[in-house]
Length: 167
Image (cartoon, rainbow, N blue to C red; front, side, top):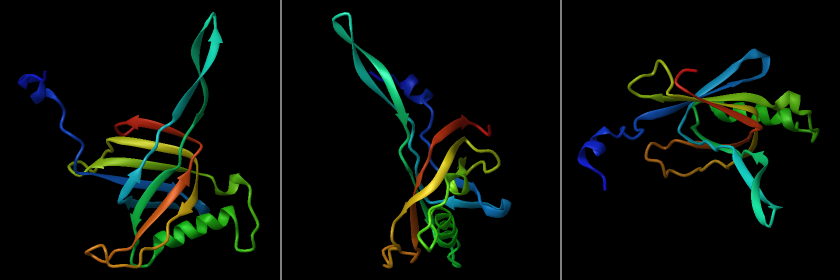
C-alpha cells in the first residue's frame, strides 16, 4: 500500500522537456535542431541457455541496438530535408555508388532539457556510428492545425553512451 508520506516524496514526472539534436556534418559544420519527438532506443542484451550440470544457465549473447526515430518540424526553407538528403547522398549517391562507412557514419547527440532550465541538459545520449536509414514520406495534408510538415527519419546506430546531467 502506498502511504501518503511516501507518495509526496516521489519525484515529479518528466514534463515540459524538449530534445535538442546535435550532429556534426561535412566541412566541420554542426547541424542542430529541436526535435519534436524522439524514440530513443536502448541496448538490448539477449541471453541464450547453455546446458550445465543437468540444468540451463543463461549467458549473454551479442548486444544489439535498434534504430532511433526522430520527428522534426520542417523549417520554412526546407533545411531539414536538405540536411537529410545531403547525408543520404554520402551513403549512396545519385549514380547508385555506395560509399564506405567512414564517409557517412557520424556521432549524433541528443540532449534532453527542461523548459525551466535551458542552460544544462538533464540527460545526454551520444550515438556513435549514426546514419539515416529510412525517411517517411511527407504528409501533404493539413492534419496539423498549424499546417506544419513533419519530417520523420530513422537512424541506424552502432553504440550509445548515456550520461545524466551536463556530462
